[in-house]
Length: 128
Image (cartoon, rainbow, N blue to C red; front, side, top):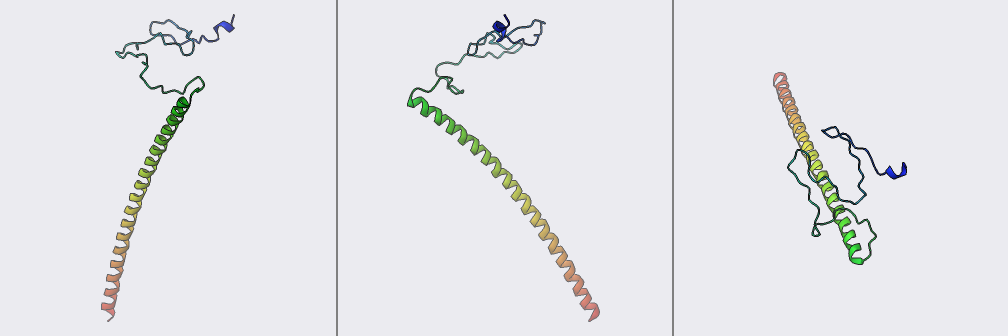
């Protein structure tokens, strides 16, 4: 008796206090198509929409196999490209910080050298 209800998972109580169970089989359309309190309607995908999820059945033709591989390759290229963009921007930020630090250090060194030059010039004037 319990084995028959394994797929039924209780859901939290809704706003009106009722509790619903999930009796839908995997792959079956969802009976709730409208969001409560919203004006958004979820539509079933048409035949012309691209399947985002990998096929659940085995690939039978070379065309299906190549489409599957191409989808994976394009996804990986996008992911690597985005990662490299983030790395580039991070290194660019580090370079700007390093340049600013070098400018500040160079300016400080120039001020110290100018001060030392003035002090040595004054010492030479007073001693000579």
